[in-house]
Length: 392
Image 1 (spheres, rainbow, N blue to C red):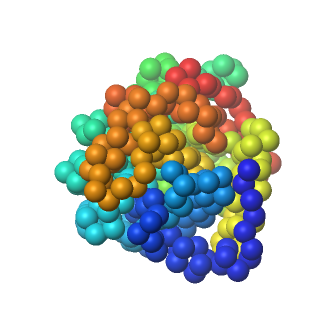
Image 2: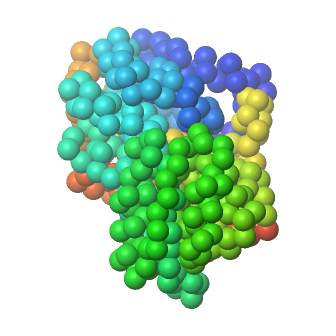
C-alpha cells in the first residue's frame, strides 16, 4: 500500500536530495532526469512518482533485505549530457539499472551507451518508433506512437465520429514531433481511410501560429493531427478556434499532459489523444493519483492529476524490483556485471506484469506492450472514450 510521507520529506529539495545519495549496502538504481530544458516540468513530477515506488518497496522489505536508493544525474534534457550521465551512473555509482532518460533525442544516444556499459536503461516517455529495437539492454516503458494513435482512429470510427478528411500540423524542431507529423499520424490516418488534405509546419517555441492556422482554415477538415508538445498544441488549438476552425484536434501521447484541459480551456473540447494511464480507472489508480497530487503539491509542484509519464516512472521502479527478485539479485558488487545481465534477461522474459498502468510485457524490440486508453476533452476535463487491452 502506498503510504504518505511527512511534509518535510516531501519538499522539492528533499525529493531531489533523496534520490541523489546512496550507501554501499543499498540496491542502487540510476536516474537520468531532465532538470532543465523542454521536459523539466514532467521530469520533476516523475521524480516524485519514482520516490513513491521506492518508498513502497522499501516499506515492504526492499530487495534481498536491502533498501532501494536512487543515484541521479541531471541531463538538462540534452542528449550529450544523457551519455555523460549514463557513464557516470554505470561506472562511478555502479547502479544495477537506470531509469530514463525522458526524451527520444536523449534515448537515441543513451541506448547505445547503455549497451556498451551492459546496464538496462528504461525510458518513461520516449516514443519515436524503434529506438530500443537494435539493443538488448534498452527498454521503454512506453508504447510505440503508431500503436497508440491507431487506437485513436479506431475509437473515433467505433463511435461514428467524422474521420473522412484531415490536415497535419507539426513541429520540425524535435525528433518525436517531426516523426509524428511525417510518419505516425499520416500512416495511421491513411490506414483508417482518412484523406489528408494538407500539412503545415512550425517550431515548438513559435508564439504566433496564425499563418499556419490560416492555411488550415482555408481547407477545413474533420481532423487536425498535431505533432508537438502540449504547449504548442495549446497555442494551435486556441488559434484554430479563434479563426473559426471547428475540426477535432487529434494527437499522440506527446501531448498527454493531464493539465491540458486547464491550459486549453473551452477551445480544447473534443481534443482526442491516447494515453497509457487513466487515473480514474480503478481503486489502485485513484489511490496512486491522490497521493501523487499531495506529494507534488508539498514539493511545490502544482498538479491536478498524474501524467502517464508519472505512472510509467512509478512502474519502472516496480518492474526493476520484480526483475531483481525473480533473478535473485542481491546487490553484490563482485557480481555487478552478472546481476545487470540477469535483470536484462528477466525483463526480456517479462509477461503481463500487473503494473499500475495495467498488464505489461516486453517484446523483442524492448518496448512495453500495455493497455491503451483513448481520452477526449469535454467541458475542460478528460473523459474516457475507449479502453483497449494490451495488444488489443
